Structures are given as C-alpha cells and as structure tokens.
Image 1: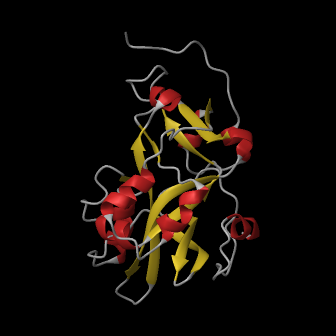
Image 2: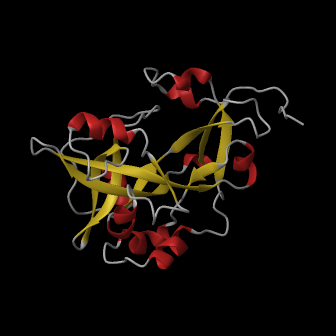
Amino acid sequence: MQELVEQFAAHGAVPAYSLPASWNIAPTNPIYIVRENGSQRELAIASWGLIGNWHKTFIEARASQSHAINARSESIHEKPTFRNAFRTTRCLIPVQGYYEWATALGRYKPKQAFYISGIDNQSLSVAGLWSSWRAPDGQIIESASIITREAVGELASIHSRMPVMMSKERWGDWLDPKLHDVAVLQGLMHHEEPAAGLVPVPVSSAVNTVAVNNPELIAEIELGEPETLF
C-alpha cells in the first residue's frame, strides 16, 4: 500500500487495511483505486463492478456488478450505469497486469488465456470510474469499473478490447472532479499508441478457476504455431 501511495503521490486518506496480493481477481472482489478527494489525492478500496444508484436491495446490487466490471470508452458518456460517474467520479486503477482470452476471430486458439503486463513488470495505471451506493441498512458500498477501448496492434490478435491506460502526465486532469467536459475527457482517453509497452504472454488455463490464486498463473507457457480460421 505504501508503494502505491508514493507512486501516485496519494497523500490523503488511506485504507484501514492492505489488500492481500491477488493473481485472480473476480467481480465484486476488492481492488485499490486512486481518486481525488477535495484537494488531495487518496488511495481507497472499492468492489470491482460499478453499482448503479437505482438498485434497491443488496442482492440486486451485487448481482449487477458482474455486468459492470468494464465500461466501453465509446459509449461511457451515454450509458445510465456509467455516465454520471464518468463526469464526476473518475479514478485510476493500479495493476501489475491483466488477463485476456483469445477470441475465435484472432490468430490463437479460442479461449487461450494471456497475461498482459508492462515491460519489466512496470505497474500500469488503468482509467476507471468509482461510485458509492447506500444499502437499505445504511451501509455504504464503493464500487469501480475499468474503462476499455478497441484493442490495437498485437493485442488485437488476441481480443477486440483492451483497458484504457492513463499516462502519468494526464493523472491530474483525469482525477479532477470539477472537469465535466465530455469532449475533453474523451481526449484524455485517446492515446497515439494505446498499447505501447504492453507485453502479452500465454498462460495456463488454470486462471479460469477463481479458486486458483497464486503467482504460477502469470507464468508463460509454450504454445504451438498460431492458429487461424482462414
């Protein structure tokens, strides 16, 4: 946690506890987010999968999260689940890497898992949204979503989507809760080389089992020649 505080200069409030290392995060699991609170940047913990403020019960809210772990950058300003958070409560989601699964339209065997990380395992800053939802019993649940875009380059040969990475020089503007201009925000999500520095490696199908959670999940495996449909 202290490393994240220093990396993002998040010298405001910090969580009361540190999250354990995880190599297999699932929807509703807790994740770190970096956000602006007043005039200070802070580190917080949120449940993965944005909860819309219209949900009436805890069960309904939790069930909705698996459908809102990702927000498409192209339509984020229009979708009821995401549009208010996009304008007012944006965040950064720090990760060491993420998984993607090959689709039938790519050059790899469908459902082949890949781990995608930065060069030399540098940490990544993913653009995200966060929101607060009040349960009927008064409990406040903070949740967050990752923003995605169309994949490019080698990543597009695996899957059609990828996270929106947010470079350090844009952190301040992206986290500014007073910035509401949709056109400006869309510009912050646009990068000339959105996949620069990202390295995919094939990994074991063990990652498909949520109960499996260890460093071996990100170990590269050998693949045969790439397969195509044509």
